[in-house]
Amino acid sequence: MEEQPMDELTTQQPTEEVTTESPTKEATTQPPITSPHSTISPA
Image (cartoon, rainbow, N blue to C red; front, side, top):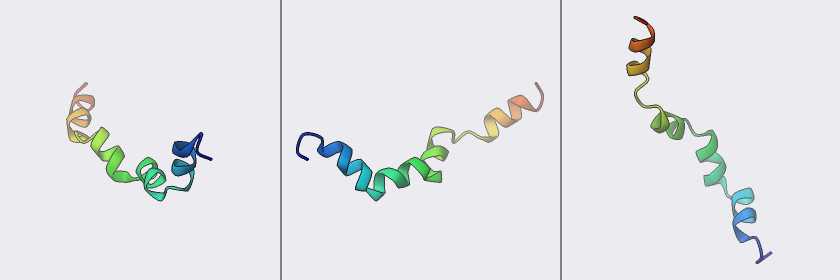
């Protein structure tokens, strides 16, 4: 258990899962949604 505390923490950690499926994380990764959209529109 002490050999892989990170694995167990991530498995039982709601914060980790929430971040993976959190819209905020994805939004932060691709915040300029209007930027690429505008470039794709005229492109």
